[in-house]
Amino acid sequence: MLLVGLGNPGPEYALNRHNIGFQVIDSIAHHYSFNSFKRHGQGLFSERLIQGEKISLLKPVTYMNRSGIAVAEFASFFKIPLEDIVVIHDELDLELGRLKVKQGGGHGGHNGLKSLDAHVGKDYWRLRIGIGHPGCREAVTSHVLGNFSKNEEGHREKIINAILNNLSFLLKKEMAAFMNNVALELQ
Image (cartoon, rainbow, N blue to C red; front, side, top):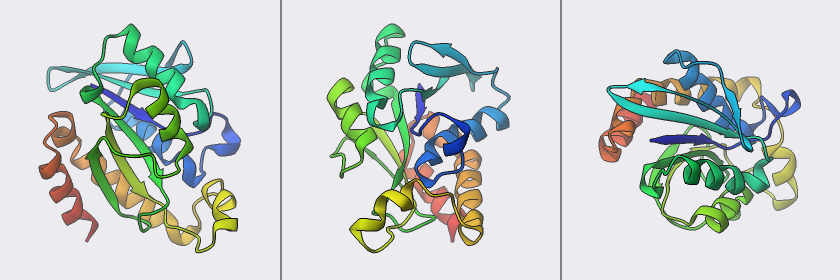
């Protein structure tokens, strides 16, 4: 299975709301003692066995709007089918601290997903993490590229911990169990 975190490379973006995908991937790598990330094509990856299955983590270094290039390259090289790819990304249209999982669907205006759809197709899994909408369209760019506020930080930590605590369901593609258990933790 391939877990992809969407985000922008560079320390100036590390704590941005738009980089929640990278933040989750880094947390999984730390929690499960993955090896250091190595460069492969246009991404940074690490892998290890979890519950007898090879799990790969990928952080594209192409910037968000071109993420699909790195994912397509990696998935093609390692022959990973779309149904074994989970893309973790921020979602404006979900309330802060909410999470949803689905397979396939549209990009909803998310440029990283647009790129993925164009380069790999649409039938990958999406782990959508709510960052909330700022309320007006003009504020969207500054909102997604802004860091989590002190008030929001607790929601960010809680959702990352819920993902870590229930990752085994996700890895087995038991998505209903994953969502139910995460929902209980986020109450």
